[in-house]
Amino acid sequence: MELILYSKPGCHLCEGLREKLAQINHPTIELEIRDIITNEQWWTAYQYEIPVLVWRSPAGEITLPRLSPRAPVSQLEKLLQQYVNG
Image (cartoon, rainbow, N blue to C red; front, side, top):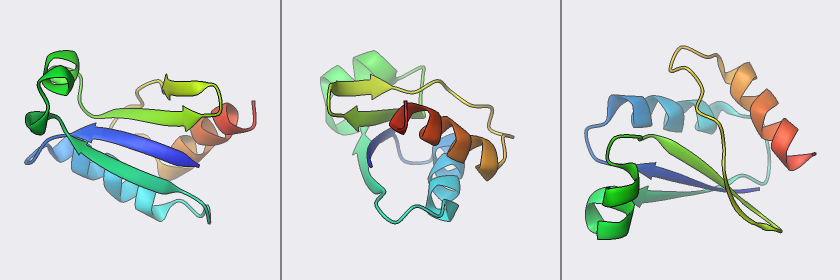
């Protein structure tokens, strides 16, 4: 499962989501962190939206719904399973 996390340094919400992703028990999660400060297109698209989690599916990149920062890891796992398993 390939995921992209749009983030920026010092974003505590981004750090929290990253920590939750690290806790998920899935052997094939590949996480790419994209710093929106380094790319003007990313900055324009996500400066007010981060963290943004994207799943690289066989059909293309799909932006996943944003979870509450208070959502438990189990809810994040459920969201990922919903998209990956259809």
